[in-house]
Each structure stands twice: as C-alpha cells, then as structure tokens.
Image (cartoon, rainbow, N blue to C red; front, side, top):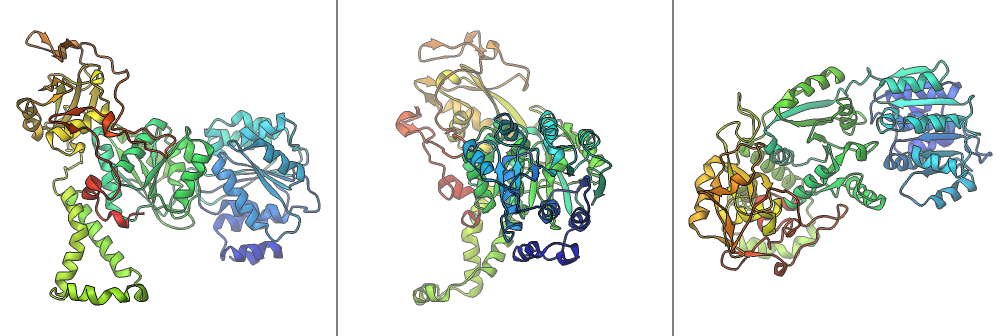
Length: 619
C-alpha cells in the first residue's frame, strides 16, 4: 500500500516522497488511516524497526493546528538518543507544514535553552520522563492543552523504572486526550497503563506478544567462562563486514571489553551510563557514520537506539531479565532486513536459552565457535570480493603504472595474485594457525580444573611490586614469550598472584625459574598451584619449605586484592575516549634493562599489525 492511499495531506506526502518512502509498512498501514480518521486511544504492538515513528508521527501531524502555538502533542521516549531521533524524524515529516514547531526535552542538555523553545511556542514536545517532570516542577511547561499523548517504547520506559514518572506526567494531561501506546512487548505494567489511562483502546498488532522478528537468525556458542572474550573476537573475525552491537551486563564489563577490543585492533567503543552526554553523542555519531565497527553497550544505555543496517547483535552475556533479549535483538533485522543474533554462553546459561526460546517463539541454533581455518577462509574471500569490487581511479594512478609494470614484469598473473593476497593473508594466518579450539568438550566442566587443558600457577609477584592484572599479564607474556591470550584468570594479591595457562605451556613457565629473571631486585619464582580456582589462596600458598616468599631483603605476606601500585600498561580510558600512555621512564624494568610494558599498542603496528589480518580494510 502506498502513502497516497492512507489519507495524508499534500504537505506530508511531499515530505514522505522526499525521504524516499514508497510503500507503507504493516504497522503504518493499520495505524495511519485509523488515527487520521477518528479520535481513539490505541495500543499498538510492533517490533523495533518496523516504522513506528512514522506510524504515529504522520497521523499526529495530520491533526495538528499550526495556527495555534500551544503544546498539542506530547511524545514520551525512554532515552535521550531516541528522544532526539524522534524529534529529527518529526521535523522531517513536518518540514513543509507552515508554522509547525517541535522541540526535544531531555537530560544532559542545558535546560534554559529547552525552556526558551517552549516559550517561543511549539505544537509537539518530545521528552524523556525525568527532564519533563523537572520542567513541570519549574512551571516551565503546561500540558493542559495536550490532545494526544504518545508513549513510544512503553515497555522499555517501564523496565527502566519510569512507572511513577509516567503516572505523574499522565495526570498532568487532560482526561479527554487520546493516548497512543506503542510497545515491542506487552508486560503486565504496560497493560496496567492501558487500563488506567485509556478508554476502550483500539488494539493493533503486527506480531504476537514478545515474539521475535521472523527475519532474525538466533545462534549461540557455548564456551568456558575464560574463553568468552576470545570467542567474541573469533566471531568478529568470522564476519568481516560485521556492524554490530555487543551487549554486556555492567558498565565496568562494557568498558573492559571495549578497551580490550580497541587494544586488539578493532574499531570499537563503549556506551554506558558513566559517559557524559557529549561523550555519548560522540560515540553514537561515530557508530551511525560506521566509523565504529562494534558498539559495546549496556542494556540501559542502548535503550531506544535506532541505527540503520545493524548486521549483528552479540550477547556477550545474556540479560538478567530474559524479556530484555527481545529489546536487544530488536536493534537488527529492521525494516524488513535480515540480521543475526548471537549469544556467547557457558553451560549454566543453557536454561536461559530455553526460557528465551519460549518467549520469542523461535529456536536457537547451536554452532561451533569458528576455528582458525574457518576464520582465515572467511577473511581471504572477503579480501577477494573487495579486490574485485574496488574502484579504480584511472586518471590518478595512470602516471605510476609504467614503473609498476616494469617492476612486476617477471611475474605471471597467477603469481601476482598469490603474492598480493598473501601480503595481507599471511598476517592473519600466522595469528590463527595455532588457535585453540574454544568449544566446550562434551562432558567437560566450566572452570579452572574442569579438564586437563588448563593449569593454575602461583607467582611471587603482586600489587606491592606494582602490578595489576593487565601489567602482570604483559610481564608474563613477555618473559615466557607467549601470546597474552594464553594467560587468563589472573588473581592479584598484595605480595603474590595466581594465573592460569594452557597445560601444554607448563614447562615454558617453569623455565622462568631457571632463567634467573628478577624484577626490581627480587627473584621471580613460579610454581604449579595445588589449589583450585575459587578455593582462595591465603598465606600458606606463599609458604614453601617452611619459609615465606621474600625478595629484596623483606618478607611479604597478606592476601588483599586491593591497594595502590603501578598502574601503567593498562592506560585507563576516561569516558571512552582517551588512552593516556605512561612514558617508559615511569615503568619498572626487569631482566637486563628491558623496558616493561613500553610497547605502544596501535592499530596497524607491531603486535596488532601482526595479529590482525586486513587491518586497513576494517571499518
């Protein structure tokens, strides 16, 4: 059905045509004629990405009186990002309507500018609940003239704790208004809003309650907890053109995963509640422009995100509330396009997978984490496709061609292709040729001693020596000459620490003892630990042959995992933007004046260039 058949006025049809809209989506076909022709309350159930903004925005604009500059329509949204996005969409729909005005009211921006916009007079206000209540309490806005209230992503607003705020706001509006409620899921709280503030609402649904999109593929990989990040990297490399959102449970985990991805050469950044509004805006601007390949986000920070053409949603951890899975995966497979939802789980998450399947009425496909051969093949053919489709600038390159032809004249076409591909392919192949199998072995237990693949070590170095988890991992990797990924589950104490490595590397790490490595005049000593992960490690772990580990003439005891100490080598990012680097003179040294942690980690150089294939072709 075309928009001309839906009863829109000529100004709206002109705007829709300019935006490139042709056929109306199912939710638009049901709502626009209904809301344009009669006054009614509405409950509309539709998945994210089905064109809901136009579904309520176009009929709303059809009913606005632009000769009256009082607030006639109020749109409530759960997040700042969605609030701004809806405002921009409404502006685009109403650009040819003379005298029309819309403004956004949300936290994180100057309130005095928003108050001025209201005083100048607008017909439509798009707001987040918290800032709108602030404006009401300041008597800076009156909702007495509101004729239409639209609750967009109502379920998300309730999930975010806005129940009381919605009650306060709706009581400030006239009883004779119309309320239009749009939601992706229909929990009991949303049904309560409908019962309390609506009169015999019309119900419209383009899908079953809480059901996932039909064009979305659901996959899960099962790994051990310690391999979760490696599995994430493996997935990112297996899908070279990935443009996705990675969901984590906590702000700390979100920042940690984003930092590690950046350190490993991926184009990524974090989005969470600790960022300022300007920082959030900057991250989202980069993501929308595809300057970022992966956005690592918390559920709350990602609420209401509307970014086109997201290919993947990756659940680094499954959500605590299984119904949130629908909101996460709603960021892809939008507007009729397909998408992939991936969950990285451990055995204890299997029950949640079954719960989610019941809610979304879809089955997950269990897949093996791609191995090194799989990844290299995918990357190789991605490079070939890019090479085939590359734009050739004949005029700009023409003057260089004679010299290039002369240099390569002794190579056949086949040999030239092999060498060109190998220049990029070899780096990726070198990284993945000994890549471990990350898939859970049938019957194995998730944990440090679940099978014989991993071994736990004791080392007589800790916080008092200036180490943290990141710097100790770098120190061990450099000393043992192994990849940092081979060191995991670090547990840092005051005067000693524990770490795990693959069992095949036991002799490699024990060889450090005979190499007489010292750190700040203290001999480094390692032993295979007799304790399992999680059983603790008091001072008896530091006692061998009746004496405490000591170094530099003093005895170290204690087991606190907190304290100060050297923080170099980690480079904490402030707000997700800066990674200050400590100069080499500030860092401790070890083993024949070798500078610890001084290697600069930058995409396309040194270790990253060696590890990451096709770095230049990433987003």
